[in-house]
Amino acid sequence: MLAFQFINHQMKQARRSTIWQKSLALNILLIFVAFILLAEAVGLSLLLAFSWHEIVKESEVLTSFYQLAAWYFVGSFVIRFFMQQLPALEIRHYQNLPIKKSTLIHFMLIKGKFNFFTLISLILFTPFAFKQVGYYEGTTAAWIWLAGMLFFELTINYLVIWLKKLMVTSLKTVSLILGLIGLLALGEYLGWYSYSDLLAALIDAMMQNKILWFIPLFTFMLAYGINYRFLKQRLYLEEISKAKTDTAFGSRFGYLQRFGIIGEVMLLDIKLFLRNKRTKSILFLAPVFLAYGLIFYPNEEYSSDGGFMIFIGIFISGFLMLSYLQYAFAYEGSYWDFLISSPIPMRQYIRAKLYVATLVVIVAWFLTLPYLYFGKSILMINTATALFNLGILIPMALFFATYNKKAMMLNKGSAFNYQGTSTVHWLVMLPAFVLPTVIYMPFKWFGQPETGILVLGGFGLLALAFRPAFAKLIEQNLMDRKYQMAEGFREKN
Image 1: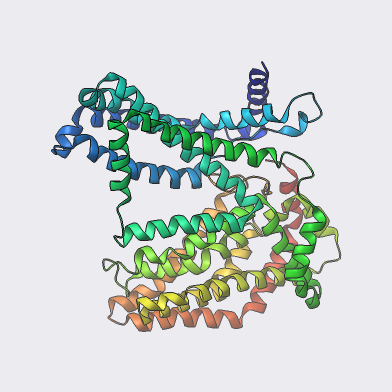
Image 2 (image 1 turned 45 degrees about the horizontal axis):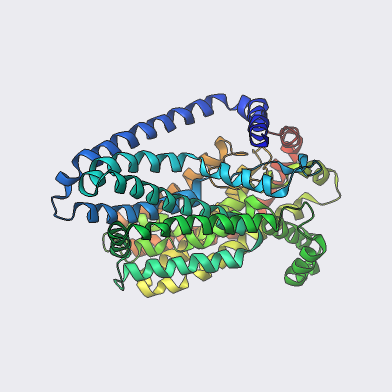
């Protein structure tokens, strides 16, 4: 059968991959962590199955579990969205063979069902189904209930696959869908309705009327069909039109070309971010991290004059900037030899990177202005941390980026993907988030938190005055290391 041949090909590809061979210790560690998580899932499932009626001590034992399962599905969606790898198959080798497109698509989608997260759900729900549901409703109902819960989980699985693939082709559509999900979450938070009660009531109704268990089967088939139709329409190598893409970019950012070589380099960086899967997925996460303050700013447990708020301010206005600058040269690793042999002056090349990062921080700060609703102190913190990002963290991150010698594979998603990452990327995070807090906290301890915020912003402003010197230092370091970087970028890891 073709399916077994596909599996055989992928197993060989995995065994022969240089990534697997070079990262054997890391892969063994990941397998060990997965084993620990599976063992914990087994323990938790047995605890729920044998002790749930004692834990809740309520007459509606099953209904209370359904409410818990509702939030489990929410957590499953979030974790899958950020961590689950998409099912993939290198189709170029098969497209010139007498193999139907539908066969390739079905294989990819069926392969997508078998993943770590689905296994966790199977482990968690199975003991509960036969110990608790079987006790109250009977063995037949337990089988039907287990199938329904797994169909709900598979629906989430295929919904995540569709959304993550849609991110590459239609970011606006994904933003609209996630905005709708966010609106529903806001309604739950404000008490307009109770999501867990609604889902629990639906499952209760399905237990009373078994014909309603076709609902999870229908949602699963619908999610599968949407994915199938989406992939079938795009299973062509020439699906993306270069002319169409260039026209769109030219109309939006063509004015940058007026600024000479610096504008050209900035335009190339913007194109790179908007065209490639890995960079595009980082852009898509930016609104999520910009909204990070909504978790902490309204919470009275976190004081507005505390050091943790400094960390949040740095994070909100600096996340996208750090994601860009840490890999500023690694993103261009595949054509680095061309860059260092082209007549582009390195000074202007560095300045273009600094300008793009500056623009990113300014836009991020502007988008945080609505946080003024939570108080003037929040606006002061966000402004001071944005200035610190502009003056200190931007040149520091770009300087450390010159020590990166691993090329970035832009055709891979960013979720749970550490390809191209080195120790330098983790080390630069320490001064990025610790240094601002260290500057601020002494003023906080002496009862002058506002002075600490002003000093933090003042450091950023002062550093801006020395940006030409920082740029020259980065340029010199890049000139000294560019051939070492080129040698590292040539190694496809």
